Structure formats: C-alpha cells, structure tokens
Length: 417
Ligand code: IMP
Image (cartoon, rainbow, N blue to C red; front, side, top):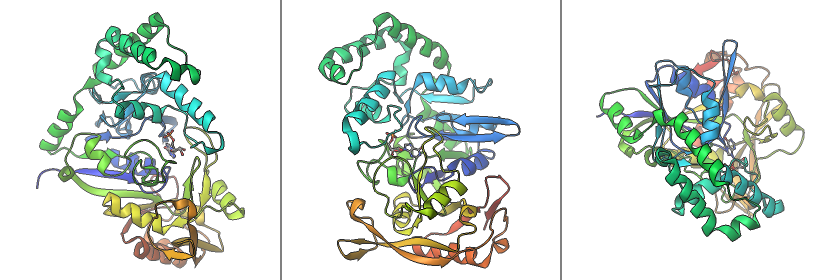
C-alpha cells in the first residue's frame, strides 16, 4: 500500500481541543496541512514562556522541521494571515499557500456582519470574519483566488467590476466600494508579503506522499458545523468532515490513513442553532467555568451541555473515525452525576439517529455516577472506576474505540490506551 496521511477531525461543534492533539502530533510529522475553513478557527499554543495564536497557519509551524500547507479548500484573509505570520521569523521554505485557495477580502467580513444584523433573532451567530460570503463567492464562481495576487492590477480591476455589477446589493448592506488607488496599494502589499509562499500545493502533497513523508491533515471546526452534515443553516460554510481533506487538498480518499476524531467528554457550541443536550442550568454553568469555555476567536461564552452519543455516532460514521480522542475528562470531575444523551425524542417518538431538523429533538438521558478526580491521570487504570466505566460505556454507544483520553491541558496528561 502506498503512503497515507493521518487525519484529525472535530466530531462536535468545534472547540473539541484539537489543538492539544494536533500540536502533539505535529512534532512527529513532516507536513501539516489545513484543508478547510478560515480564520474563524483558532487555538492558542503555549511553548515555554511564549504563547502563539494560530488561526490559519497549520500547527506544524511550531515544529521547526515540519512543512506547513494551506490547501485550496481554505479561505484566506491576506491581512489576517500576514498578521499571524509576524509571530514567526523563519517561514521561508516551510510555509506553502495553495494558489487555488480563495481570497477572503475585507468586504466579505462587512457582508457577513450586515447579513447577521439583517437576520435579527434568526442570526447564525457567525464569527463575523466573512467566511460565508467568501465561500459563497467561490461557489457562485465570482470569487478571487490567491493565485490572482500575482497581478494586483488585474485583480483590483476584477474586484471593482464585481462591485459595479452588484452595486445595489452592496449599497443596501452599507458596504462601500473600495477606493481604486487604495485597493491596488493593499493588493500590492499582499502580493509582496505572500508571493514567496504561493504555489501549487496539490503537487507538493502528492510528492510528499510519494516520498513516504509523514503527513498530518488538520481539520477545523467540527462535524456538526459541516455545511452538508451539520445543523444547517446554523453551520459554517465549509466541508469540515474527512471528505473535505480530499477536495481541500487535492488528494484521493485512498491517501487517507488513520482518522482520529476529537471530542470533548461533554458538549459545547458557540453561536445559535439546535443543541439538544444543552444544559441551561447550574450544571451548564459549572461546565463553562471548569472548562474555561469562552471562544478563542471571539471571546464569546460557549453554550455547554452533556455528551451527545447520538450526534457522535453520526460523526464517527461520516468521518470514518478509527479512534476517538476524548478531551477534557477532568472538567467532569466532582459532579455527583454525569448525563449522556443516548437517544432523541421527536414528536413523541424515540429515535437513535440525527433527524432532518435537530430543533425538534429532546434528549433522552442515561445517568452515570460521577467521580472525584481524573485530572492529571496518565494511565487508564489511574482513573477512578466510575470514569473508566463512563469511557467504556461511551465506546459502546458511539461504536468506536476511545484510544486517547486527555485529563488536563498539559501535554503529558494524556492517556494513550
Ligand atoms: P462562521 O464560520 O463564522 O460563518 O460561523 C458559523 C457558525 O460556526 C457559528 O455558529 C460559529 O460560532 C461557528 N464556528 C465557526 N468557527 C468555529 C470554531 O472554530 N469553533 C467553534 N465554532 C465555530
């Protein structure tokens, strides 16, 4: 069998703690590749005294030997990317941006925020970064690709023509037409900063696969935010599931090897939309406090609730997950009882799959006895018996092995079974 890449994918509504696992795995991989999303994603990595905020640059940037690829499936805001690059001074030769990735420009963010305002209480609760409008333009075939930065003059003319054609729509949303001279100046600055990194990354990944390099594919957001398989329309605009790694990098499904799905031992989501196992009471607040559940990109408090085994089984299947990494088990420490959603009740009927609209689904819970302390455990048999039983029971419910359990933010506090 030819060489295959390892894939990390989020199984819930994002923020599962992919950062800790990706950071760990990035140390042993030659290539780390992002395949979807934009600077709506984000995690902070602490190395010694220094803190790094990563949104678009793959986590391999912290391994001096790793090469980092931003694939064609990503939407890239040049201004934010350049800002993020400033944290590092040795990127030449180890950062590559696909010429086919789409540009996310300031007007996309303005449109995103205008649409959210216009939707009022039906707002999606986006990160306001312009993700939806950038992917929208891509699919409507009116987007602009990173490769177009090679000719800023031509690109600026195309952007202005786009504004001209959509004048009424832009005016209604209060999005001003850019000043031609300023636009050209801005695009020229982007070209100067990014041109050394722009390339055909598909060829690069193919070569890496042929050479037998170790490749890590780093997913962003989570399965329940996937444009097709999530809680539409309360989703992001990209393919966040495993399949997105193929189209977002240009590799075949056969090039995907081991799939590790990341899930928290409970559930969170930011933004609006259905969340059957949400706990609006004391327990939810306690999860938020214990787990520091506030958004990395926007600082918003996350909605919190119990592990949803039905949604998880759906995610395991869609992504072809080989093993689950169960994160933040320690956040459940000290609860007298821990709940797990094992089925949904929809219009009086109990179902064990994710229905068309999760809005109508009420959770059916199984109650587990809580435990005092799992924090810091590094071996499975160091966990309290109740925590071991919780994990073993989840494996049965989600139909997948839980191969990794994380018991604190520290890199070493990880159980590998
Ligand atoms: P957008 O991706 O900014 O369009 O936001 C759409 C939905 O996805 C909103 O509910 C966001 O809160 C959510 N979302 C986007 N990125 C992330 C993430 O990295 N973590 C968690 N939720 C996210």
